[in-house]
View 1: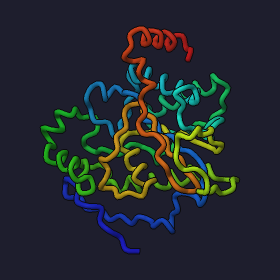
View 2: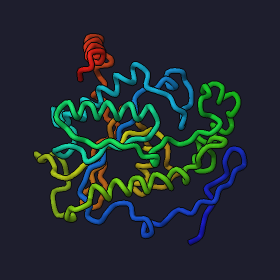
View 3: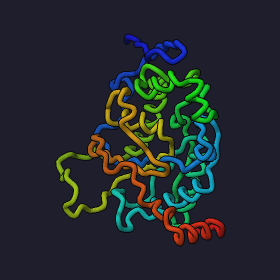
View 4: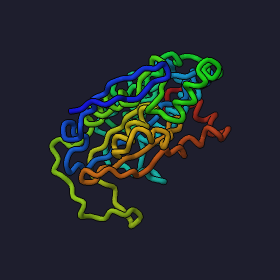
Amino acid sequence: MTCGRSGSGPIGDRREVCPLTAAENPLIPDGLDATLVLVRHGESTFIVEGRFQGQAETPLSPTGQLQASLVAERLARPHLPPALPLPSGDPLELVHSPLVRTRQTAEAIERASRAVGGNVTRRPDAGFLEIHQGDWQGLHRDEIDARYGAELAAWRRAPLEAWAPGGEALPEVAARVRPALAAMLTRLGDGRAPGTLDRPQVAGYGDAVVDHPWSIVVGHDGVFKVALLTLFDLPLDRFWMWSMDLCGISVIEFRAGRPVLRAHNLTAHLAALTDEKALADLEERSRSGAL
């Protein structure tokens, strides 16, 4: 196998990356029928302060805790109208980045699931850590503009050629995301017969709730960009084509091994945050420990 260069970083860094081919490292099991739900974490204290996060530890802000409660309630009762395109039953597992902001969001989802009788298994996975932002982590965005303006502009324009000084290049991120995704998808397919594409493929015809396993990943905007490109076999230079709002929900269904984007960046469940009465009720429930 021939190794290639990942590009030239903002400090002249050139890294040799040897990605495995699909044959050497299969991602989606043959015939897989399953659903994967991606949930970005809630607002953190660094976001409130305007600081770059990366892999810095920064907890949820009070607003972030409310956002986490709302997305947790939505996922605990996914078939209340308007229904999410999710299977019946409990998720097989709830996986999250080990960082505190994702862990706190995942814990809210776990609590909401158990409150309605669910029995989800939660675990951290370092494969879904946010992209390491090197020297930018913890700095205010204005300071980064002032000190690293050229590097930041290059990152925004050509993310395969530039990245944060001392941070991760996108091929390095993809190299840890791919096996983390593959392991989750393998567990979703374990012990199940392969599905078939010989069934209706167009939504809107009174579709029944599907009956196959599903799992949830709580992660970050940057790592989810890479995860989606990986799942849909798109080049990493299209990194900026995706966006994930705080506590936004995306749903990928696998139909006989073929990924289908059923929903992306859903945020309607956060509407209560703009309604003063609903927000007051939510804050009261949070103080009381209720969902």
